Image 1 (spheres, rainbow, N blue to C red):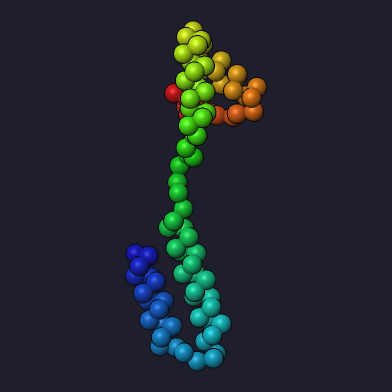
Image 2: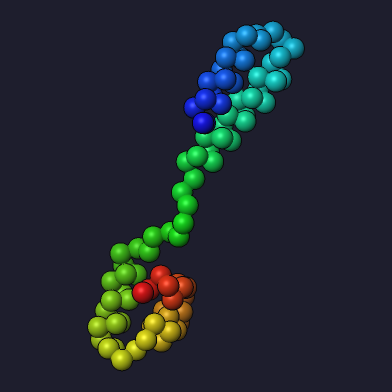
Length: 88
């Protein structure tokens, strides 16, 4: 769909190559860039770094009786804010 829109924009630009249409051409190119940027956006939760993952696992292994909330509280003391679903 995006490729079709980009192709149509390029065809329109080839047909209308006059100075009056220059402003329209710039607007179409901007629109094309916006479409491509939207396509490249990553969705979902950001990945947690390996250092933080290793820290969580070491806390979990050292304190077997601690739950997710307790580990989350200890991480917040270190200014690491993660959701409980991220740690599961």
